[in-house]
Structures are given as C-alpha cells and as structure tokens.
Image (cartoon, rainbow, N blue to C red):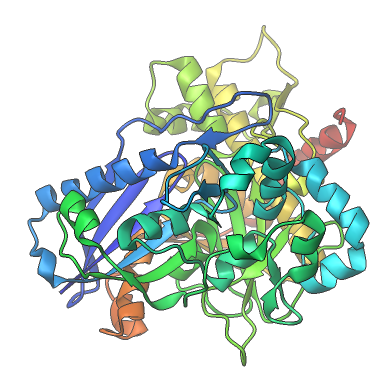
Length: 492
C-alpha cells in the first residue's frame, strides 16, 4: 500500500512515494531539472502558467514509477502541498483564463491597503487576523479592476493546490485553511469573510466548495489517471499550503512548536492556540491543518521573500560553482564577512517591512579587501538576519520560540547557515529527513484513514541538532546589531 505526495512549488514540482508499512519514502522526484520560470512583465509582478505545474506533476509521477515500479492500484491516497497565496482563474470549462498571479507578486499591495482603510483595522484584525494585504482576495480585486473581460468569464478562483486537485479530480474545491491564506475567512464567525468580499465586490459563488484538509476531497478521473499512470478512482485525501504542510511534515502541531524553511523564500511558522495578530500585519495568521471547532490551532507565519532566491541569484552570477562549494567557500570568510552586509529584500514587497519593496542592498563592499568568500558569507548571514528580524515580530506577539524544526534541505544543508541562524536567533535547530512532498504523502495516508499519525511518521528521523553557543551568540549579536542599524538607514 502506497501514498503519493506532491509539493507544487514556484521553482519545481516535487513528488514522493510513501510506503505505508514502514512510513518511509521509497522514491522521490523533482521536475523540471532547472527552476521553472517566473514571468515578470512589470516590476513587482510575478506570474506562472498553471498548466505548466500540471505537466510537471505528470512528469514527476512518471519519474516515481521509473525509480520504483509500483502497482497503481496500491496507491490509496494522494496529498497536495502548494505555494500559498496565488490566484488561478478558470472558466466554466475549467480552462485557465490568465497566468497565475503567484505569492511574490506585489501588484495588489495598494488594493489591500485601501481595503484596510475602508473596512477598518478593528474589523480586519479581529475577524481576518490580518490586513487584507497582498493576498489572494486583493489579487482577484486587481483582476476585476484591471482586466474586466477576464473577470467576467471567471467561474472559479482557486489557489495553486486547488488547481492541481481540480486537474486530478475534475472538481473545483478548497479548504478552510486555504480560504484563510487568501484572507477570505472570518475567524470569529467561522465562515467566509462576507464583508471583505462585499467590499471588493467579489461574487462569493466564485469561491469553490469547502472540503476537509484530511479526508476525501475527490477521486482521480480516468483522463488524469491515463496521463499520470495511476488508477482511476484513487482518492485525493489531503491538501495544505506549503508552510502549514511543512510544519505538519515536521510534526509541528501544538502550541509552542515551530518549523522553518529556507527555500526560494524563508519562513518561520509557529503554532498558536489563540486568534493572535500583529497590529501591523507584518507577520500573518492562518488556519493550521489540525484546527477544529473545539481546538484552535493557528499558524503564525513570518516570510522573507528573498531567501534561497538570493543565494541562487549569486550562484548564477558566479556561474562556475555548486551550492556545496558555495557553502565551503563562504565558511572560509570570518563572521561578519569582513564588514559586508546583505539586505535580501529583492523579491517583491516584504511583509515584515510593512509590504515595502526596497530592493536588495549590499553594504560595506570594499573592492580592495573583499572576495567572493566574503560575499557568499554575507548572503547567508543576511538571510539569517532577515529571518531573525521577522521572529522578533512574532515574539512581540507573545510567541515563545526556543526550538525550530526544519527539513535537511535548501539553505539548511549549509552548516554555516545553520550556525548563523542558531546563534543569531538563540534557538536550537532540529533537522529531519523530510520535505514538503513527503509531508503531503503522510497527510494523504492519514486523510485516507488507512494508518494512524504515529504510523505515518515512523519513517521520519532526526538527522542533526544545531545548538547555539554562548561565545558565538555574543559575536552574532554585535554583527546583527550593526545590520539592524544599517537596515533602519536604508531608503524606503
């Protein structure tokens, strides 16, 4: 008996095959080999073609079959994790009407700000737990105002994961967690946020019916099965945004627990049992995967857009070096990178900066003293400092974070990055042999009802623990203080 998990990222699609008996991932695939392109038609915009995600899902599934030839009839559930906050619009024939406006697109910042002013902070922060910001609802309003012929043809709006679920099952559906990440959920009344949609003049019929996060969400159609090489009727049994799913994949489920990722963007996501909000909406609260009527479980999320993308940008500039080599070269430079400091804010509007798009900055560069080791280290330090800055906002909200779990992947593959992150933030880091696709497969197993959560996670193991060291903490405290001072002096 097997379960398949998909992670629909903006860089690539990952797939994992989970064996039920052992809880182990027995095959994994990533497609395409190179990062998927992001269309940037204007500064601050970011779009992708949803159909390209589907084609890479097909290819990744075929790669799983090549790695480990499995009986499709033995796949008992499919789980989906996905890039959050995107907007996909389809017509009555489920045809995509325009490219998806993805998570790092900044065009709707002013639209969300106008909604905050009109609806009032009291309503937004008490009912939505967020300012409307640059999220899915505001992006849809932008389409309505700027592309009315397209808006008039919309039958359903959905998140990227909802789109993949529709391609699998032929049904357009969503989840409460998904509605919350689009800022379409009223936490006080436990229903769709009617006043917000009314203000935006959005027809609520455009929203898809709600299905449970864990449970039957639909069945794979004959058409999808033929494309994927799976069995018709295979159930889709789990769906969550990439950050709630990452937390779930690391068994971060209860108040006081936190998870981190450092892929294209960097995130720290902490579980809370209260409807807590940041008055400035610099970090955001969403419904966690295990939330229910009797037990409030929300995820408080801080996001740094410019994380792995800053590192990959530098890799492309250097052109002749691998990521492992970059980590080794960076470690040769001293803490503080000889005075170079990077501010990795070059991937759209940053929520932790109040939705400002200030761009990336390199400060303190001396052509006579600095080499690529200094610059490589400055990138890793700057990313860690940006994450620490966002965690400070979470602590202002009363979240007490002492230990963070992360998958042993992306930036957390760098011992240097782990050292800087642990000693700047003062938290211990637990690294596990898991990723978003594996988490989605484990969610599918639980959602199908075939195995217990304990059984689903028994194949996951802790690989390493990185503890802060007092002497290094003191050193990085001074370096971060300098970084923070320079940040405050940067122009808006």
